[in-house]
Length: 431
Image (cartoon, rainbow, N blue to C red; front, side):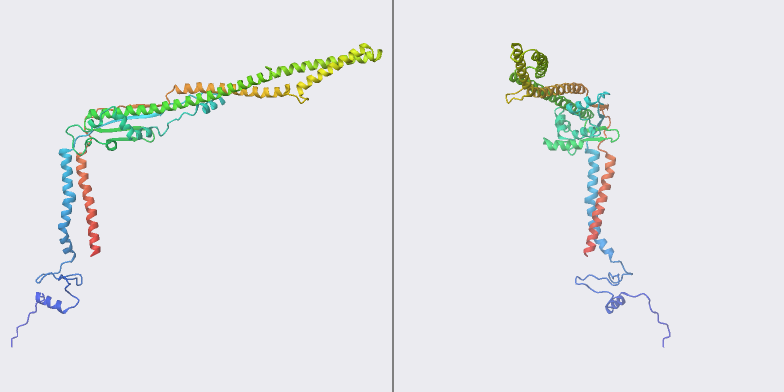
C-alpha cells in the first residue's frame, strides 16, 4: 500500500467552478441573450478568471466612449473655439462714461400770501416736480427707441458700429431694421441709477475711443433736450391754465356788465338805489307837508265854516297830497297790479351789482395768479447737471479675454456634467 498522504488543493479549478455552477441553481444562469445574469451580486466572466468583478463596471466601461465623445463635442471644441475667437478675432471695445444728476429747482415761497397763494395754485396749476423718478425717466428714455432715433439724427450709428475690420460677431448687421438697431443699442448701452443720491451713470461701448466719447456726448445732449422739454411743457401748461382762468373771469365780468346795461336800457334808470332814495326823500317831504296842512286845516275849521273858500282850498291841497303820497308809496311798494316797480327793479339791480362785483374780484385774483405763474415759469423747474463729462478712453475694456476664457469652459463643464449625470440617472432607472 502506498502510505503517502494525499494533498487536496484548496484553490478551485475552472472545471470545478463550472461544475459547481451547473449544480447550483442559485449561482449563475443564462439569459435569453446569452449574457451572464447576476448571482448574489457577482458574476463569472470567463474560465480561468481569478476572483469576481462588480457588474456596474461593465456598464461604465460601455458608456465611457459616449461620455468622452459628448465631452469633446460639448466642452472641448466650444471652449477651444471661444478661446481662439477671444484671442485672435474679437475686436476691442472701448467704454466711455458720463455721470449726471437731474434735479427740480426749489419753488419760491412767499410768506404771508395766505389765500392768494392757494388760489394761485388752483388757477395756475401745480407744476410737476420730478423727485425720485427724474433720473429713472432719463435712463428709460436712453434705452428707448426714441433715443436711438434722436441720436441717429446726430451720429451715423450704422457707420460707427460697422467700422472696417470689426469681427463678425460683435458688429452691427448690414442694413438693420429699426428694431434690430434698437436691440443692438440696448446691448451696447448701460445705464444705472444710484438710489440714495439719484445719480445717473451712462456707459456706452464702441470700437473706437472717439466713437465711444461721441456717443456718450450725444446721450448727454438728448438727455438735456428731454429734461428741457419736460420743463417747458410744465411751464407752458401752468401759464396756459392761468390764462384760461383769466379769460373765464373776464368773460364773467363782461357778461355782468352786459346784464347791467340791458337792465338800465329796459328800466330807463341808471341807479335804482339812487332813484329809490330820491323817491323816499320826496315821500317824506310830502308827508311832512301834509301834516302841516292838516294842522292848519284843524285850526281854520274852528274859526271858519266848513264851506268857506279857505277851508275848501286846504282840503283840496290835502287830498292832492294824499294822492301823491299814495302814488309814491305805490312806486316803492307796488301795491297796484301794474308793471315793474322801483322796489322790484332795486332787487334785480342789486343782484346784478353783486354779480359784477364778484366777477371783478375773481378777475383780479386770476390776474394775480397769472402773474405768479409767469414768474414761476421764468425759473427752470427741472435741470440736468453733468458733473463727470464723457472722457476719451485709452484702454479697451471689452471683451474680457482672460476672464471669458476661464468662464466659458467652466460654464460648459458645469452644463455638460448636469446633462451627463441626468442621462445616466435616466438610463439606470429604465434598466
